[in-house]
Length: 119
Length: 111
Image 1: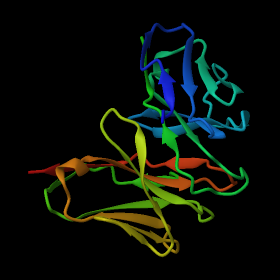
Image 2 (image 1 turned 30 degrees about the vertical axis):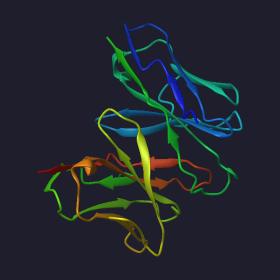
Image 3 (image 1 turned 120 degrees about the vertical axis):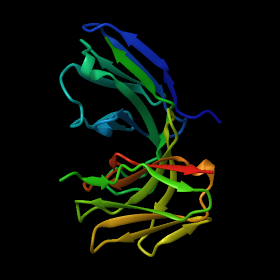
Image 4 (image 1 turned 60 degrees about the vertical axis):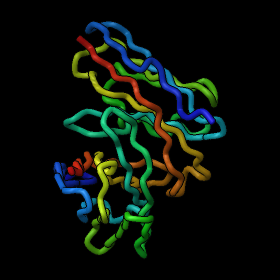
């Protein structure tokens, strides 16, 4: 059973370039999350989708960040233009949330992450 | 005040020792609590949920104190393979599965 799949595993780019991170959630999961992890700030929720609809993007740091989920099996996180302070590990996670209005004990399944370095 | 606070450690303990981590959360309306484990350069994985009555899974015991707004994780008879970072996780009130992660406590179990 395939888990959450992220690509690329590593991305090195120059400041000002566009970066696109990709995620394929676990089949059947209806919630998808994008997190960013740094040593200083730990894991931060950027945005999450429920049934392909963005529910909360309050964690997206700036207009340079955008995320889409065109269908249940694919999501992208785009940074344009990228800056050195965007360097971090970006994780995608999915879960099967039954009711988005209720707290859930459903576990989050994380992908292996994308290590982004912006020079 | 941070939503979830943990002692970053590292906790260096000998094999076989008992070690405990605490975590405090700021929002009294939080209803779901978890411990995740993250190995170096890997993704976080759920270790256990934390229930009001406390719960145990083998060598691991989790406890919740709502009055004081803290969560604990106790590891007995620690193994070398327990070396990892342990993340305290609390749901963000407002519904859904918005989880706030602590920055983690690093554990190193040594021979």
